[in-house]
Image (cartoon, rainbow over all chains, first blue to last red; front, side, top):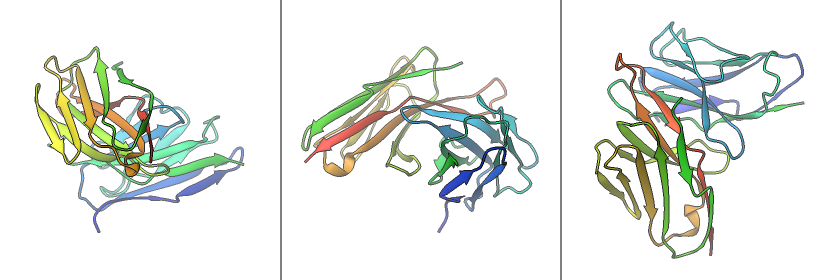
Length: 112
Length: 115
């Protein structure tokens, strides 16, 4: 089936640890996005990538890093510099020429 | 930056009632999207609107793109228990280059339907 796969569904981070969230899409979409969702809040953009090997910071990029080595993959690393990482993380993708972003099922990150 | 004001923040209704929610902005958007999010899942697209004044339906859902391009509303008719969830509006615009699409999201409307 075509879609966006995020893994793992649940992730726990120890203090001082970097963790990486996976996002893979087989829709042949061009652009990919990472959002953070906190309770009662809208989605806030962390990073986005329009093409392979290129990405831009969103509104809350501090403490996060990304890479886009392949069109279908856009992993997000939550670094130890992110002091409040507990949140629901959503990955999305979009086909150029279409204004719709499609979302994965999300990863819930908690701190031990 | 751009902001979307979505209201109401939450709604508690009885099964069978109609629901209305809206989003307003100080900025002009060229696309309005409405998503629904179930608990612990990602948002799923309900309706996409592309032209000012456009009125679009999807089953019991109806959404409109405001004439001023600064607002949109979503109506749900004859609500059922599975309508429970968070409904988000999202507006999209482009930068001067035309290729740097980003979505601006409202904070969501939490809908609870009592059977």
